[in-house]
Image 1 (cartoon, rainbow, N blue to C red):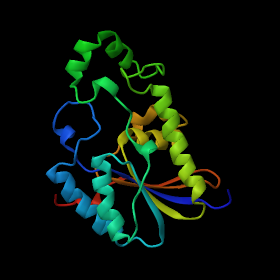
Image 2: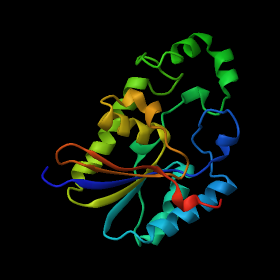
Image 3: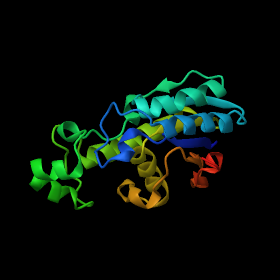
Image 4: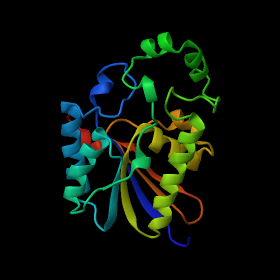
Length: 207
């Protein structure tokens, strides 16, 4: 690829599960604060030009963040299932304490971040999720050489991809943590990737 993709990454807004210690189950919506953050994001992106496409996880907390941004850009948001957060399977919606009580052996395995064989009960393994995260983002980059695109997704996807690009290992995602409704920007696909903006929340000033 001769031309870099101008990749804008948006973590979804504050969601209701952020107010508890529950694992991030599928249908959790944005909180009231998250809906206001989505409005602020839309205002920010209304000043961005020449955006070729906006992709989003179809999960409500991401999709409801993406729709106002897409409207501000005069685009139709494109849902991609592979942008979803990791599948927690049967543990989805549980608190950490409940997970540890139901599956103590799995909880001990989860505590070791280097154990790629760990699999959520009835859900995804670490290795499967890391592979999916990198593959879906790489595919978007290769589909839009020389273009500007926006991706709205979750911590695991976005931080994992940034860690893959700049730390050489998607498993180091905790070192690239992004705040809710934050904006990051990467030039990727031609030569070495460049991190142009990370975890920026200037649009949230005053909230």
